[in-house]
Amino acid sequence: MKRGEFVAPTYLMLANVLEIIYLKPIIKPNLAEELNMIESQTLTVTGMKCGGCETNVTEKLKVIPGVISVSASAKNNEVSIEYNNELTDIATLKTAILNAGFEV
Ligand SMILES: [Cu+2]
Image (cartoon, rainbow, N blue to C red; front, top):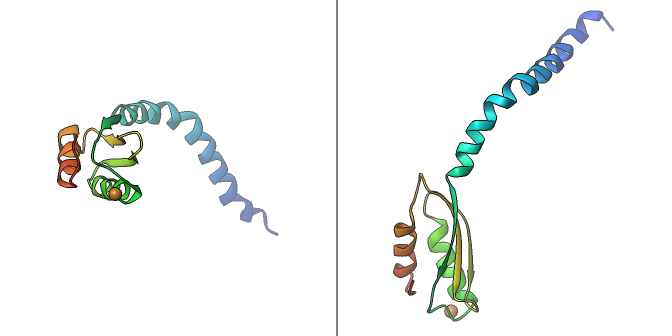
């Protein structure tokens, strides 16, 4: 093996180390800002009777841009939604639930 073959991996390793040292503090505030956009809301939703209703309301919410996760419980009359508040809002989410045929 020639010495030159080791140049590229060595450079990449050095680049990785520099990235970890110098870029991490720069990336961190942006990540925190992004995390502030993520909101969790648990809404009282009535009218869900079974797993089919849970699936229905979940599907209607999941297609909304900005919705990250949905958890519906017919038993507890609750729908928990995690969403990006820059992309959607609670009024939009409530409208989707009403349109799915449930009370919120
Ligand atoms: Cu049902």
